[in-house]
Image 1 (tube, rainbow, N blue to C red):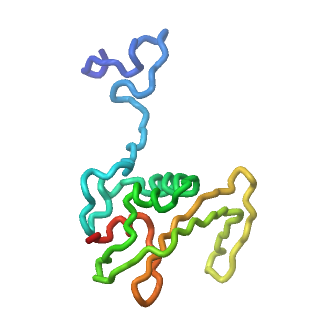
Image 2 (cartoon, rainbow, N blue to C red; image 1 turned 135 degrees about the vertical axis):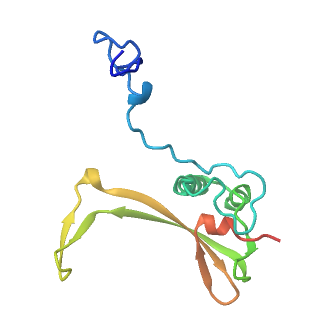
Image 3 (spheres, rainbow, N blue to C red; image 1 turned 60 degrees about the vertical axis):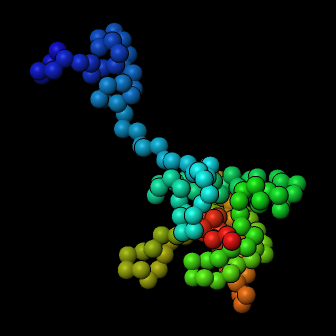
Length: 162
């Protein structure tokens, strides 16, 4: 007991002979909140209802898994059907869209730019190998009758399907 309350501040045993266990009691490490992952649609998606699990949904993880699966799929059309990507749908502005193409772009950031004070110039630094970031970008290309429209996975899932 100390300072008027009786509980353990140092782990499960409380004594100096036992090591503290991180995450026990109110002295636990400040771990960031675990983000929700939108991996399973719960029911049929409603038009305009893109995020099924709230504002912190890790849609980037879903898109990464989609890209990985799409690139390995022996039948791209069936994969799109299983993933519930609409081949035809209506956008929020009422335009009828038809899916033309799925594009996967591979990106690697190999340098960084830092502006100098005043913004008139900048400094360029190539990144060391361990700091190079690689990712793939997904673009779903729909046609609206006049021109192509580029949508991400969340935007495509919000299309109203008739």
